[in-house]
Amino acid sequence: MLAYILVSWLVLAWIYFLWTRRRYYKIACQLKGPIGWPLIGMGLQMMNPETFLPYMNELSHRYKVPFISWMGINCFLYVNDPQTVEQIFNSTHCTNKGEFYRFMSSAIGDGLFTSSSPRWHKHRRLINPAFGRQILCNFLPIFNSEADVLLDKLDVEGVQRGKSLEIYQILKKIVLEAACQTTMGKKMNFQHDGSMAIFEAYNGLTEVCVKRMLSPWLYPEVIYRRSRLFAQQQKVVGVLFGFVGQLLEPIVSVVAREANKEQMHQQSRVKSKSIFIEQVREHVERGQLSWQDVRDEANVTIAATFETTSTALYFTILCLAMHPVYQERLHEELLAELPPFGNITMEHLDQLTYTEMVINEAMRLFAPVPMVIRSAAQDIQLRRDDGEFLIPRGTQIGIDIYNMQRSEQVWGPMARTYNPEAHFGPDAPPRHAFAFVPFTKGLRMCIGYRYAQMLMKLILAKIFRSYRITTAAKLDELLVKGNISLKLKDYPLCQVQRR
Image (tube, rainbow, N blue to C red):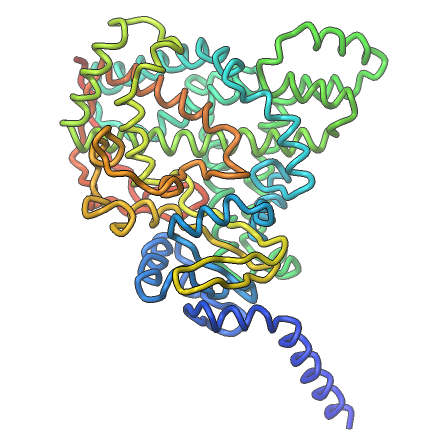
């Protein structure tokens, strides 16, 4: 009798669970996609980062996009067309990041990259002034200085010693150094001090979060905390918290010294609000942000600035190394617009139109963030060429930037080739405004996109004004990994020659 009652309760609970999710099943029947396995959905097929992006591209050819599938028990809307991307990015109901980002926020804190409204809206409003154009102009001396360090490294290692270089590792040190100085006001001397533990921790953190995102059986916290992956997460998080805590020592002292609060407030008003740390110091004193808020934002700001910018910069250099004809055209612009040596100014950067084209083309082929996920906070009406569909609240929406920006339907027959003039030149055919979204667009566009553009243009200009970079690698031989920021399975070596 007891067993009969227990089974009856389980059946009723299961029926009730299905009934509460009936709207998801309805839209799944309308926007048909792969069904997947019970409870884990497409988890088995998507769990390998090296095959994830090709697998999603294959599905987009097999099913009419956008389509519905399942990640664990989450209803998952897959999108890779500009028309739908525009609807999602401009919707006030889709500004929240997807549920999967809670895996990142639980690891490094709830910053702008991961947070949801109203917290995101408040913090974005407070931090936004730190990324204005005039403020960014103050960073040019730091950008120039770090670019010179990079040139010295390339010259010594690549020219004088004749080594073949894995440029990505060198770039990461330069970009992280620039990020620490421009956001936290501290020079870390990564070129001279041991920094591999920090880089490995950042890489380890993103890999841990992606593995969990692609493993639905690890979604429940009670299971995840007993897994080896959680132990790996705790190890890398400890390294990163120690690093960011070191960067934030001044703000800790400000929070602690209540007796000198007014005096410090007066000093902060006199100082230029030129970096993130100075802005948040004032917000802490006014009670608008807590210490935990500051730590979370610092963790995420450093990680996002470092990861996305170094990734985009590396792929631009690699594409130019694989395509010497465009590298020479870039060099011609740099000779015409820049002095032969010395610092580069904002006026110089504004003239470098071809430089911007080669960067955009690299980010088109190799989106720094290959996929972003949003969550529907309310029901939304979605338009497709065969009608309108109601996407229920709570649906997770995956925007596949990587495959959309390589789609022949969107970019034409040369979509998978590197050709800056064909896709971004003055004679390039018009594209949908949301066909190219490396920093996303709409209501939640990346706060640091101007920062990244300035830093990349300046570093590229300094490199290719003085050096030629070559590689034996071919574009179609590169194997990408679908991580939070795009990675390669193997990073090819490059050769550096002084011009």
